[in-house]
Length: 350
Image (cartoon, rainbow, N blue to C red; front, side):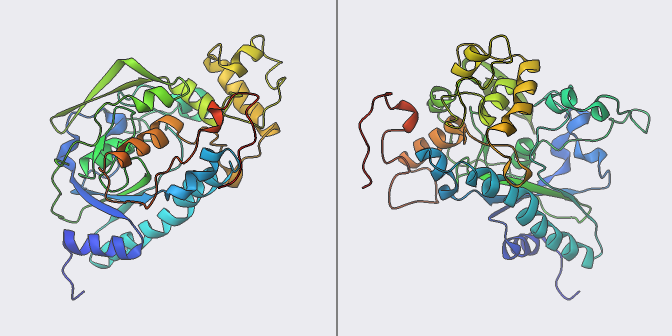
């Protein structure tokens, strides 16, 4: 090939192929990571990890915000980006790297939480659901069992794309919380980007906690150290997040009838948010949700639409002028539908 393979060239190809943001991280930044999250076990000869960010257009969240179109966000903001668009972009970059004599290992977003919990590598939500995950075994002495899971927020941090906010979501200076990621590992000797050291994006305003249906804690936190930096986040209740996201709450899901969870002993209290469901109840409810809202494009309903972690955070960051992706008008234009009283008068169109 006439063109030398450099970090700048790879970034240009990635953007031309459709990535909105590109960053490159050094594999040494994973030193000390739990084995279950360490991508060096996927490709031990890798010298760099390339991070690709794909924006979630703000309009994808409009239907959830207005309470009138709920399939669009999971169909376009999840399924299309994760399953269609990003994999096609990754392939272009992998082929370009291969044409220069190096290997590229794609790490796509499969839309799940993985077999391990957020930061310590212990069994997580998918291990509860999947017998095959629970009984995997290492194939080499001292190595982790398959599948090794690349933690996307940590990987994006390693690639210098931004910071992890108090909400647990990754924030970039371009789009705030509005992006999904994909990665690839390569043995090409690419110069890494520095860790993000720009103006702080998260100011711990608490908007994410205030508007979250109850999965984020305003008082309890968890910390993780990545590449010598300590990151502190709200302690997330992943099972309640899964329940509310889907959503098993009448507050978030206008499709649910009052008797939706009556086959559970505390179904009415769970529906109203008076009682948090157990893991077992959450799994049962996920199995029942299809009766009331078909899965769009094979993805789970995203009824919550990131009410706190995405939308409230985005609204705050935009009001602070912290994001480079700017709009002519604010996102929230009227009183949110979930705050309207039961006997509210008709709200006319503008």
